[in-house]
Length: 449
Image 1 (cartoon, one colour):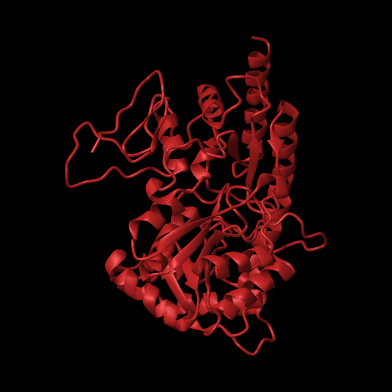
Image 2: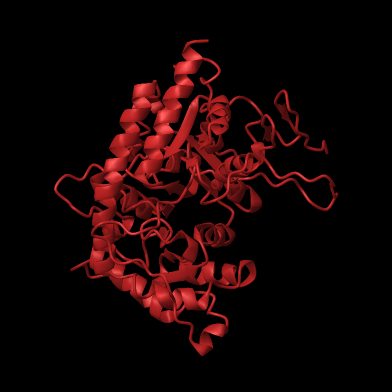
């Protein structure tokens, strides 16, 4: 195979079709290559962070504005429950945790979902409907390993880490489904049914709210998606890690949405939900996530976990029981809605002021997905915008990373999202204000050239 190579002056591609970016490589690279190992691409956030580190970036470093980060600010928020800053570790916490997770945490997750989404419904989740994992990618990896020989639909754009995940396991065939910016990235239920029936999909994977566009499927549309999954025996694999960051729910101080609300029978409807403490509880460093699904699916993903990862951290799982409650979720979400809602408005207004255009304002999550095509050169592509911003200690993520392309089966052609950039309003408000000021300067200098 062709070895990957970097160049300081231009962009090249290896035989895999993975793009090799200016002054760096959009994939793993080593001075020494070994025939036993393949090049493993980095996710978009890891790539941009690595490039920033070459210029001196470190987490917590002074002067940097990390609008590429995939985590929310983790400090205290007005009205939020107190942050946990210390954990007791019992003697038996030194032992392995069960691969599916501690029973008491599984019970806590099930009880919380029933309280938030299934109050009064005859079918209720139990601990047997929950599996605990050591991070969101691990929960998704377990599910992918448990899939059979099916066609699996996935959307473009979507979460960058799906690309390699969909390529590692060769039993299922990834089928891309295009979302269009001029339609606000909407995908109505009748379009979903056409895809399921026409392409013979056995499962559909998506983030909801979508990372990066912020599009939300909720209410009657989400209820119909669940109904279609049941009708056509097509599993819905729903990444709901941003489901407490909802911006179009007037009158609700703590809006949350989940497909769990629309499931008829928790053990018969093929709905698989992924969530955890990472975003909605603002504890990304805990690496505590869960899968909520029919019992047979939980048995399968737990079996996959037994050879993939062996289970999560026992003391962290025990500590998580205290925060995985209905009351904590509502209080934390109310604080998120207040603080992050202001940051959303600040970033949307600031980006529009400098000439970034939005196909749709974010309805959920903490990202703004914008096109830089109208900006003066060289800022009018996502990669060049990223490079120019990086020189001013601002980290963003070029849109082409979200053009999920497992195995590079669509070749090395230009991405539909080469003019897009994902901006995060996860950082503190002061960081956003500093970044917007610097971006205004970058655009002004480009216009005056």
